[in-house]
Amino acid sequence: MELTARNNMKENDNNKTVEKISANDKRFIRTVSYASKMAAVDIEFNDLTYAVPSSRKESKMLLKGISGQFKSGELTAIMGPSGAGKSTLLNVLAGYKYTEISGSININGQPRNMQEFKKMSCYIMQNDLVQPKLTVIEAMSFAADLKLGKKKSQFEKHIAINEILATLRLSETQDTLMEQLSGGERKRLIIALELVNNPPVIFLDEPTTGLDELSSFYCIDSLQKLARFGRNVICAIHTPSASIFNRFDHVYIVTAGQCAYRGTSNNVLPFLQSINLECPKHYNPADFIIEICSGDYGSDLIEQMITCVKKLPIPPISRAKYELELDTQNSKVFWIDQFKTLIKRMIVQLYRNRNYIYLKISLHIFLGLIIGSLFLNMGNDGSKALYNFGFCFACIILFLYIPMLPVLMHFPFEIKVMKREYFNRWYNLSAYYWAINVINIPLQILLGFIYLSMVYFITGQPLEWHRCIMFFSTCFICAFIGESIGYNVASIFNSVNAVFFGPAITCTMILTAMQDFGDSTPLPIYRTLFMYVSHIRYGLEALIVAMYGFNRPRLPCPVEEVYCHFSSPKEIFRIIGLENAPNYWLDMLALIIIFIICKGILYYLLKQRVQPNKTFQMLHIIGKSIQSHFNIRPSVTYT
Image 1 (cartoon, one colour):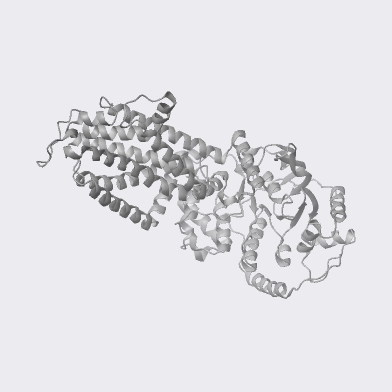
Image 2: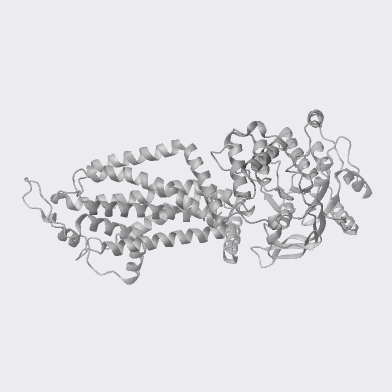
């Protein structure tokens, strides 16, 4: 195949821009006191093999016995065509995938201890998801409090944050909200957040994806500075420009799960010349070698490259001594400190999201006026007592959907951010779990109180303290259960699927809960079980008892009514299929038990999102197989 050179006028212009930036940047490069205190951590892997189950009977080999070494103080690029296995190799080395692996991975010459390795490394994933409604300096401060706790004073944290921001060219953006940062600034901010606890090993997946040439250069230039401070910086990257490619100290090319080249970026062209391949002038060496590995010039050349690499020996890494002891014995940040920091962060985010709170308050006021006007003065009217049953049902439905629907929309995004923070050891899962539960309690009570205080008086319900407290309490716990259902659904599905499955599941709960109202005929056992699994049944019974139970006297009837059949509370219970008033306290106990079960399920599902067991891993594989078999779009599949 005849080799043709591309039009490189744009590349030459970019090179001139980069040279100008580099010249101006010489005065910026300096050794900072916090970032330079770095222990050497070298990674070696031999005969590394990784396979995953496929839709067929045999497993699919993603890594096929590859070997190599990544040294501290170097910026390493893992490159290769799409589907070659570069991200898989990065995931395996980072510990994101560490089961079903054969071969050896050594850290400083010793077999990798996964728990200890996670303490000295961080993994920056491809998506640049950040916590919303926080400025850069606030995000860095919260990260420092979560990762360092009280091991450093606030002054020491402040100095470290300023040095990290200066190193990554983010000092001028420290008061900018993270949503308003450019793509390159957001990428560098995510790196800065992980540098707070000074990890000696940094893994990055596609750090330049979606960035222009200048932003990509700034990102790679920042990574090179971090490597110069003694870190082992490893990133999987698509074909970079020639100017960026030359900034990598070490290049590892993967094709079809095997290594096609390992060595310095400057040695790529001599290596290709050794197998009789001449890169055209003005041609990007990175583009050229990736095109070869993609099979554009025949499969024989790929086999030749793989064979040459296998013959190259891997010299052992020799160091006289490691300059600093690895900081893996530091006292862990206390759980209560993590919890308090997460609560503070969520409060700041809620305060910044005031428009959302104002919208919810307005919605509850609007619904209070609408529902109150529909059931105006029916609570104390004997002729309309049966209609008041509809009011209780409307309150239960409102406190099911209004707390649930917003969670279905935003929580899947929060889980993605949480997974990144949890994997990089920002906090314990239990601290995050309790924080998201506690932070929503005051807001749910406030919103519920606004709505209930309006409709309770507008609809003319009995002004008795014990009935009012029982009514309010029942609605509050139903709101907490509805919110918990939303969290459970959103922790399994993405936003698109959650908005579909959430209402579908709750509609089924409503139908089963209302089965025998108005009919005293005994139900089959299976229908009775479904009926009493739904919290709506217990909530509705509790509200009716709060309004008409506890020996409430006969309700007054209007003068114009000749006969008020439902003025007697006992008749109300009888007409809806209940011979006697249910026990309010048993209904409340059932609601509390359902609430506790929902919260327990939520913790279990969150645990599976960050540390899935074999059952959930198999479900994920089955879901992907169905997706690929039926060509289902990823946006509407299980995530």
